[in-house]
Image 1 (cartoon, rainbow, N blue to C red):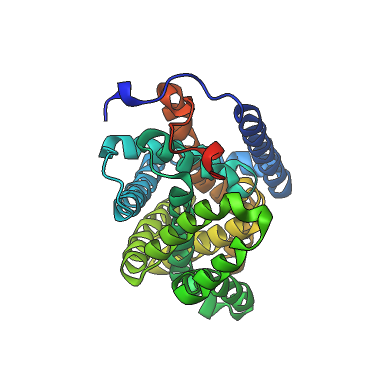
Image 2 (image 1 turned 90 degrees about the horizontal axis):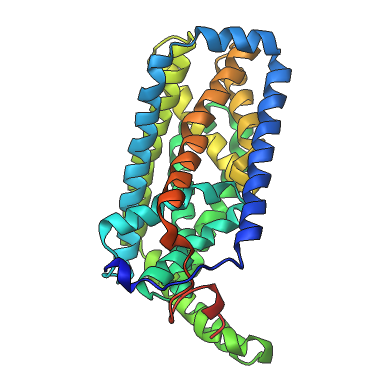
Length: 341
């Protein structure tokens, strides 16, 4: 698809709310950083960070990139699974990375823009593209739960939260596959006058969800997600090693578990980027498992969030700068404004 086929004009209606959401996320990130610094003692944290061998940090970023590459493979797999064939791989990658900053919007609701962009660029219905975003989140959630399983076994007090999240994710997958029930519910919705204009979109949304959560794509997506998030766990291990923790298999296992479980905590918190919840979980679980000094736990938390969340946000913002086509008006058959038609 050539760039000339993209719709012209600039869609500005949603920019103020998106900008406000991003600013809220950035502001919360600053507050969380200050809070961690004060909690750990600013001077002790400064000393710990000054001793960190920064030549290790690019290796941690490489582990994050490994995660992003495999997650893009999963995203592109989902797109192709639903039959989108007119989105070249490089455009698909552009769209995928552009979604990273949306993670710091409240509740990550800004990630729905990925479905909007997919619709704008390909004409694929927005209602059919939105389940891709949801399937990404659910498959990632199942993947990090798998990675945190051994740690949860070692610390039984974490079982209630683990099982609650697992139950919700599996319930979504299983419910989508009970097709007679879903079709019966949709038929019931058709009798509600206020939902009349939304029925076509709701049916598109369900059909795409049903297809994405079939056993084969779900197994493939969760497998890719498990390997990709393991990469970030290795990056966290490298950071802990650089801060002076022993380079043992125990430290590696703890790093994978702590990062995975904290990712779950951040996701279920619905806070922008999991900010505050993820940091508290990272720091608390490090103190529980490895018992490092406060300053080291805080430094490890700040460094891994810089190498994961904020690294991704930075990459996404860079794509925004070089991709003005992201903000063009929606195409005829796609976009947020077409959801009810």
